Amino acid sequence: MHAQRTPFQPKDPAFAARVRASFARQKAMDLIGARLTVVEPGYTEITLPYRPELTQQRAYVHGGILGMIADSACGYAAYSLMPATSSLVTVEYKINILAPAKGDLVARGEIFPADGTHVASMQQTLMMLADTPDVPDSPE
Amino acid sequence: MHAQRTPFQPKDPAFAARVRASFARQKAMDLIGARLTVVEPGYTEITLPYRPELTQQRAYVHGGILGMIADSACGYAAYSLMPATSSLVTVEYKINILAPAKGDLVARGEIFPADGTHVASMQQTLMMLADTPDVPDSPE
Amino acid sequence: MHAQRTPFQPKDPAFAARVRASFARQKAMDLIGARLTVVEPGYTEITLPYRPELTQQRAYVHGGILGMIADSACGYAAYSLMPATSSLVTVEYKINILAPAKGDLVARGEIFPADGTHVASMQQTLMMLADTPDVPDSPE
Amino acid sequence: MHAQRTPFQPKDPAFAARVRASFARQKAMDLIGARLTVVEPGYTEITLPYRPELTQQRAYVHGGILGMIADSACGYAAYSLMPATSSLVTVEYKINILAPAKGDLVARGEIFPADGTHVASMQQTLMMLADTPDVPDSPE
Image (cartoon, rainbow over all chains, first blue to last red; front, side, top):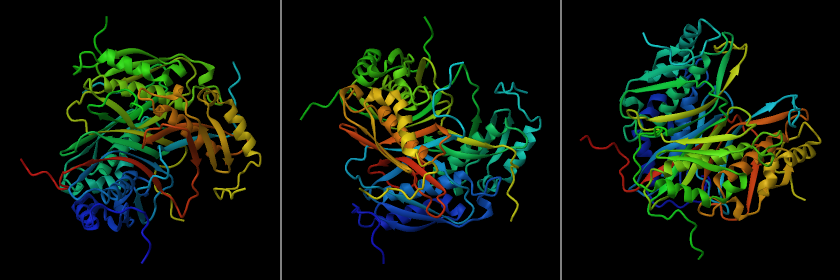
């Protein structure tokens, strides 16, 4: 047995069964072969075995399918902490794809406790300009 | 016959066949039943008939599947304008879900021509605070 | 006089004065020299004259300042349609920077009416892989 | 003295001076009163003392200013690991605002080493639907 990954106390003692029942209603998870393998308060894991049916044109797992498992993993991490009578919807998500996905995948959803006051989180894409001075262009 | 939806001239005269061949290699599109129904220079449409297999826990189309068809539609709109010898990858995407998806869907990918210099585009989520004065809180 | 840019009817007939008063309380807009130049139902423009004080290390307007004016412009476009008694907060925003910002700027915030049911909007960053076949890598 | 916060070895031994010189050219940081207080390989901190000049209509620090310091902190964390001859640009960023910003702020930019293969990162906004069953709506 392992220590719980987050410090949260769920409001609903039956949170795990509630999350698993909701996941079981997600027919789209069944379509892609995703399984909910861990449910803890504020933390979940979804496992997706690689299958050729999941790929884009270069045989990597489709970026949208990465989005599917990440969206559900994050959503259920949050849902595990919500009251038994609630439901939830995704308003928006953003995903940065860092490497080609070529094998079995695990999506982890985790709610971070506020450490002090956490004011904002950023995701960003940068482009390195090789051999380019980091100064203003000379006036033409 | 309709007028072309964008003013772009593709670099590759065989762009449509190249885009369709790439889409045909996306096994994930086949898995969900998506079809590439329009390919023009800088513009595509992907049609996704509703099926229960695509749904999340409340019987709406899963947000990740919305991401899949939007990602591919936008990507192929861009790819239609790229050279014949190129490939492309999605670095990141962000999707705002505005309404539950309950029926057949069409994802449109469109490249916007620069009108003057288009410097930046934003997507944003706002929360209205009903019956809350739009002024600083009174000091306690 | 021009036609209104959106088809919306504001709930609050005094929306323009309310938006302008809120903008006037944004000291950060004053700091950067931004002015609210258009307020219509569901549409605003914020004008930002170029000044060296606004720049990043290469003398372009800082990406965060693009975010500031876009955030306020979009927010006030939405706020113009909200009830007189409400306030609003930005939950999140995402900005794609398409070109270096070197001169005076205008940020437009616009609320799009639903045309049919608009289910989702995506912003995406793609990377073209020049001279790379758009097919799976050969197995090693 | 503290242990370095990341395991990275910079390619450029003079990375810290290079990052500090670039930051010093960001006049926008000076305008808002931000200071670069930590520079390590793959890690930076920018400190922003609270000032009324930085606020939006409700006297919180403007969301765009949160974006400014987060954008620069993340960018310089990446830039610290880049070659001496390079420059960089922000292609896009997304920020989720979790709490009102009412006091002095520290923005931390950190590059995460790949732990195994890190395939994708997501940021998401969820809406809890209180007292709403997490099941399909009954057919009307």
